[in-house]
Length: 437
Image (cartoon, rainbow, N blue to C red):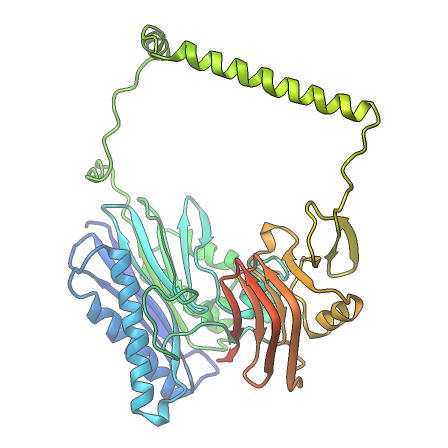
């Protein structure tokens, strides 16, 4: 399609000896479709580069011909890449620790959409209307803290544990429907929009504001990609840097109508619309009004009876509401819980580290329910034993229920974690173990 622009490149950076990144930037079987990917290898120089190359080849091979809807194909392609790496790890002991993280996407200018699949801490951004949107969520300890609002973007960029990832491609066999493995979705891709895929070698060096400033420029994608790589290297170039940018063309011609969407009908004047509706009485309308009137009288009578009982000294139902503790970074405050629970309910506004959890456990003898303080904190983990203090040989968790967090417990491979009477409700990933990149 005229005006459609695409470009990708990767650079070793200023501190690494070998480039473990790879990327895809190519058209698919339809002229309106583009396949994009940013891939970051993990597991040592040779292993990481090998894993990234395996993932790149597997995804490109799987997407070579149409096999169904785009998003399903993309998910299957990433799983195919994952299982290809896992099988190669078994065949080659020298690469037993290799894996990668990646973000893959397909842009569709006819349906004006971007379908994506994501695992790890590479990223997909959408730039539309002079606004930059981070579409993917980092599967890393620091990324979770940033998304939960616990730390700022600058703090995340400088965090000593920013290389600790929670998910990766190739460490174990997976299926498409395995929970807690793939993040995926579809976002709009309108005329003039741009999408940016990148490895963390870019976003550890440049802020979202800096990315947006480059994307706002009137240059073609190749100029923007090279500019971003140059800026990341000037900022230190601590890691390999991979950048892929695609831009939807701006066309003055009418866009082709997607057969899935009906064309907009001629507008009806408000006065005409009202006359049309009011001139056609609906059957049963009077009966509906009568039923609502009767229901209103019943509710009014019930309210009066309750008021009468309370006003005349009838004993009220005993309040069995428990107390709930809200743990904040600075203090603990007691607030009423809306419903009685058999456990002590603790609502937390940040992830509890090992010391905070032990302090809380020692202060309460009864079983504990852990909940986020509100829905904005759901994305964080409830408890993390993967902090800077890695000397813990073993941890025993007992008599606790963790509810409504994306992640329950974060641990390390060196910690022996024992769970005794521990339950998880509405938790996507009960226990995850950090892997160092």
